Image 1 (tube, rainbow, N blue to C red):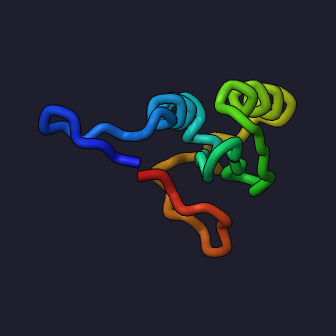
Image 2: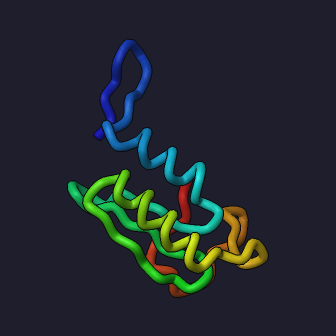
Length: 92
């Protein structure tokens, strides 16, 4: 939901946590907020999907997943063209 406030377009309450997750983890995961209580991250290498009800829980799941199985840097990267068959659209 976008709201105009003093000439500036303001996003939803979830824009900041989503941007923060993407800033820190976007090279390794495609991250989206799909709706109330629906946060998802998809690994860029294996396409494994993590889900959570809030951004804090998703961050913890991403951290645990990455610690157990780091995403290779030659595979990861937000600047890479998205391969056909990906479940989510690239950020941006």
